[in-house]
Length: 128
Image (tube, rainbow, N blue to C red; front, side, top):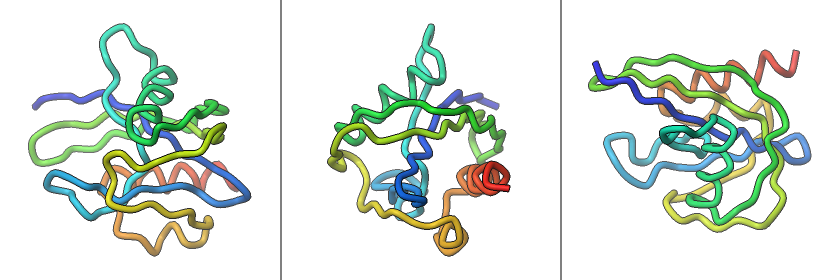
């Protein structure tokens, strides 16, 4: 099975978390934390900041490593590093259908991509 290395940004501001609605692919319409593939010779932190520029035209600071989740999709295995980040600039959606800021309690109300459900669990653990 193909292994995909990725990174995502868990952007937190005023006790709310930023999430985006996928605009393409088989998981179109589901919610996720923005991010993407880690390129060769790139760290997870570097991929996270690069992807925020590509997906959101936004600058973020990577504040903390939350953990790495492992998830088997039908056609690939995803190994995704999650980073708690702060938004430094404004943002624009380049790829997502929609975005929203949700509280910790509201995280469980969204239809997440399967792997991102595990990121939600990392966030809850970080808030204990």
